[in-house]
Length: 76
Ligand code: HEM
Image 1 (tube, rainbow, N blue to C red):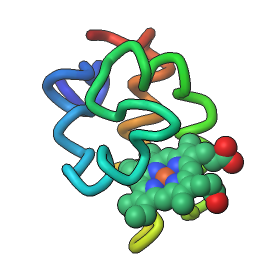
Image 2: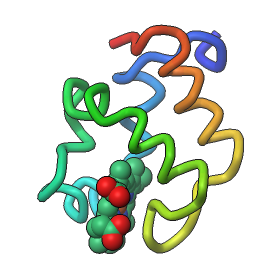
Image 3: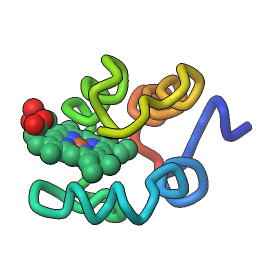
């Protein structure tokens, strides 16, 4: 079940729009497994307090999906 054991390629990568990747490219690459993994805590913080994306916060279940990707060990 992807909800319980999400993987980057299947579940997480598709959540980032091309404008997200572009906007954040100066800090990290949201299309890169390694970059998202390395910055996951910071990214989670911004997603969960609604600061990012800059135009519209993610719904709670999306933020939870990102959190469970962290908690299940960053499956690729
Ligand atoms: C899912 C999409 C996005 C994620 C996960 C994300 C994540 C982040 C993170 C982790 C930071 C660093 C915050 C810090 O170090 O304090 C940041 C900063 C920033 N992001 Fe994004 N971002 C996303 C989309 C966007 C979009 C769409 C825009 C605007 C077009 C944007 C504009 C910025 C700007 C201007 C900063 C600079 C620092 C600041 O003022 O917080 N981001 N983002």
